[in-house]
Amino acid sequence: MTAVTRRGAFGTLAIGAATAAVPALAAGPAPEPWAKGPEGQRKADLGNGRFLNPILAGDHPDPSILKDGADYYMTFSTFDAYPGLVIWRSRDLVNWTPVMAALTTNIGSVWAPELIKHQGRFYIYIPARFPDRRSTYVITAENIEGPWSEPVNLDLPKHIDPGHAVGEDGRRYLFLSGGDRVALSDDGLSTVGAVEHVYDPWRYPADWDVEGFAPEGPKVLRRGDWFYMITAVGGTAGPPTGHMVIVARSRSIHGPWENHPANPVVRTRSAAERWWSRGHATLVEGPRGDWWMVYHGYENGFWTLGRQCLLDPIEWTADGWFHAKGGDLSKPIRMPGGERVPHGMALSDDFSTDRLGVQWSFQAPGGNETARVVRRDGALVLAASGTSPRDSAPLVCIAGDPAYEVEVEIEIAPGGTAGVVLHYDRQLYCGLGFDEKAFVTHQYGQERGRPANPHGRRVFIRMRNDRHIVSFHTSGDGRSWTKFDRQMEVSGYHHNVRGGFLALRPGLYSAGTGEARFRNFTYRAL
Image (cartoon, rainbow, N blue to C red; front, side):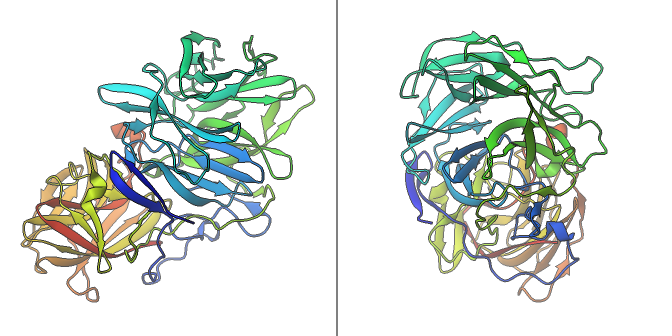
C-alpha cells in the first residue's frame, strides 16, 4: 500500500501500513486454537468455513461499515488517539487489513463516525469534542486511500453519532442522537435549516438493568419500499445487560416510524454470556447476498480491551422485518463468503523505515506531536515532552489479546526519562520507566517508587499483561533478565471505573529533557 502524506495540526506525517514484525519472543503458553492468528489480532477466520467473533479484536467501537462493489470498508471511534479514524478493508467481512488513518488534524475526542460513499465520493462524518466545545465535522476524499480533506465544521454542538441517509426526495440528511435529524446541502459539507426531532425511540421495560436510555448511533438503510432506522439504547457500558439494538421503519424518510414488534433485536441478556453491552449496529449486505450486522461489545471480564467489533448474521422475514441469528455470538458462525485478504496488522516495529506504522497513535496529544518523532539508525527517536505518562502524550497501539507481552530497548539522553506504559488516559495508567539513576514505577496513574537503576541510560524492558496481571523484566544487554520487584493487577483500568470509553493500550513514553531512542519493539500474544 502506498503511504499517504497529509499536513494538519500534527505537522507532516507519512501514514502507511504497519512495519514488518521482528522475530517473536521465546515461546509461552499456547493460546486457545481459535485465538491463534496474526500478531496483535486474534484470528476470527477458523479456516474451516466458519469464524468466531470478534472480527476485529481490541478497541474497535462504534463500527461504521460501507459496501463499495466487492469491497467493504470500516472505521471506528478513535477518541483521544491521533492519527485517528483508521480505515480497514475486507472482501468477506471477516478478514480485514488496514488501509490508512484518515484523520490527523486534532478536532478533539472522536465519537462514532459515519463512513459513506455518495455519488462517487467518500465522506466521514465525525462527532468530536474538546472539554470546552464540541461539534460534528466532515472530511472527504475521491479515493479511500486519500488524501482526505481537512475537517469542515458542521456546527452541531448538541448531538453525536451522525447517520447519513438519502431520502425518497433525493435530499441528504444526518440522523442524530436523541431521535433528531438535520438536512444537508447537496455537497454534504453544510447543514440546511434547523435540527428537528423526528423519532421517539422504543423504550425497554423499566425493570431491566441498563446504564440509561441514551438513544444514539442511528443508522438508516433503504431496502425495497422501506427505510429502516437501527438505533442503540440502554447506554454503551455500565451493566453488561444495558446496551441493545432497536429497529424502526417507515415508508418515507420523513416518517412516521413504526417500531419493530420484537425490539430489541440484539441484547446481552445475562452477564454469563461471552459478549457484554452489545449494540451500535449497522446493517450490510454480504458477498453472497445475505445480510449481516456489525456492532460492538465488551468481552466478558475484559472491559480493559475496550469495545470489540462483532459480526452477526440476520434474516429478513416475510413481513419485511429482520431478526438476528447469531445468538450470544459465543459459537462459530458460517463464513459470509467472498475473497480473503490478509487479516490484522503487526504491532511489532523494528523502526527500520521512515514511516510511522498505522498501528501507532499519540494518546491525548497536544499540538505538533509528530514533530517529536524521527527515525534514525534503526531507532525511533522520540523527543521528550512533559514529566511523566500523564502529560507526555505516549505513543500507543491497540492490543486485542487478553494476554501478551511487549519488549523494547530504550536509550535516554541526559535529563531524560522513558519507558513502557499501559495507558488508559492521563489519570489512569501503569508502567515502568527509568532515568540515569533510578527506575520509575507508575501505578494507578501515579508515581509509586524510584528504586535504583543499575543499567544507566540504556535499558531493555519487557512488560507482560497476562489477563490483567502485569509484570516487568529488565536487562542491561537484552540477554540476562531480572524480574522487577513490583507486579500489578489492572482489571479495573476501564470505563466503568474511570469513564471516557477508552481501552488499556500498551505504548512508549519519553519525558523530561532531550530524547529517547527505542529499538526493536516486539509484541507477542501469549
